[in-house]
Image 1 (cartoon, rainbow, N blue to C red):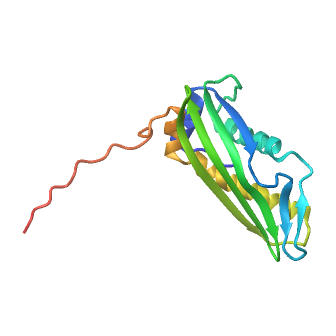
Image 2 (cartoon, helix red, strand yellow; image 1 turned 180 degrees about the horizontal axis):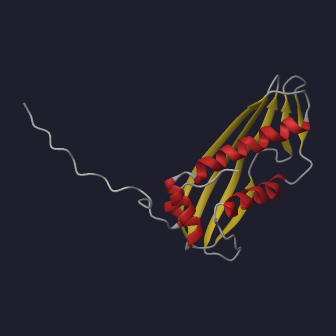
Image 3 (tube, rainbow, N blue to C red; image 1 turned 90 degrees about the horizontal axis):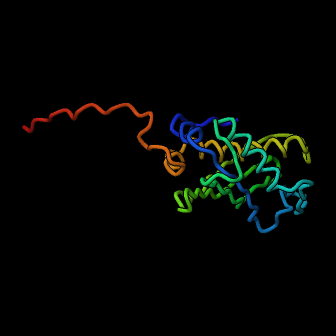
Length: 172
């Protein structure tokens, strides 16, 4: 499970957040595309609901208190989340993350994750592993982004060491 950097961790602990996940993919039921047979394999679960549970768990693991009434809102929009199977299992996750704090948009950015897995054709375990790894990669990028910490109300300077004074340079 991805862990936040110190700045993001401090920002997540500072105040409760609400979380919403919306599936904006063109075909929300599709999670796997089989290149060899040119067919889609649909999901048996509500992808947005499933993703919300995973993301909530990741955020709480990083110190967040998720509360639907919080004034700091994290909105994830699934733009891509699928596996293309064709010799390998190629996972892709792309989420747009928006943070609203006190009604003001403080972050609007896209985070991506990719994965590659070898394995037996039509293996549900390999498909799920590729999807999970791709989403984990996108979340790792989010949880290590100082702009995310700042958007949540944290300081972009938190946890950074003081810089030494510049070294004087003599010209020749």
